Length: 366
Image 1 (cartoon, rainbow, N blue to C red):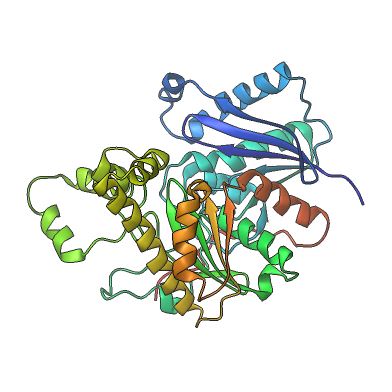
Image 2: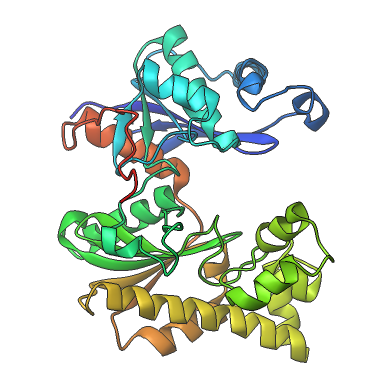
């Protein structure tokens, strides 16, 4: 079997994670820091691309890492219109949509495919994205709400969730496409999703305010009190959006988004910290139950991933409440870099066919 070299690129707000793989083994990895003031000089996210590329190449040169003979460059996807999951080979349309942010969202993730394409042009090989944030595989029945003008859309930790599910399916001797899982990503954001035969058919929207509260996100809030607060005159629209997505959740209750600190305060017996911490876990448990029902109770496993899953008390509480549904398995941390490399390797080995980005949203309304 041929050995494949894969270079994975995952841009964040002020840094870019990079990793060079030989098959599934990491040869070199780093978190490349970018000067925040310099990043602030650029008008759009995509304008940062040449600077980030230059910074990455400088660090690689400093560490004597060559990108010659790399078989594939894989970027964190972003900025695309809703699409089904899988590994996509980058082409002009995909790169252009990432550059402009065709989905209307400006996020560093959209730089991933652009950087990968730049490296491909310079060093050869192929260019892919794998299960970008824009993946939307919801069933139509899951999109309907009680207000006709509002439909539910998919904003989930798709890359890490799918990789967790693929890995678990292998451990039980099955293919992901033959399994039903409830998968939870429990980190800075929390998403709980129903995976049905290889598709994420329903989930909690982490962008639009569904599901459990998280370190900085309010999660699902009763609609009428929220509407009254919006019209109370106390907050602007911008402030209310921030309260729901940036300064809600744990930080609103306890003035910190540090889950480790809050769990330690809870364990030390601080009453309100304990109540809020356990309320967050309780909300995760309720979401798991909802997704299990979306799968008609036919669940092959409940999978927990993300940074907070290192907390044994959290895993224990979820297990105690949910193991009557299916076995609960913890996969602490994230597999984003590994997931990108694995997606490329599956295509290079012929186990999976690369998909073509059409630019046509998978859902265009009813």
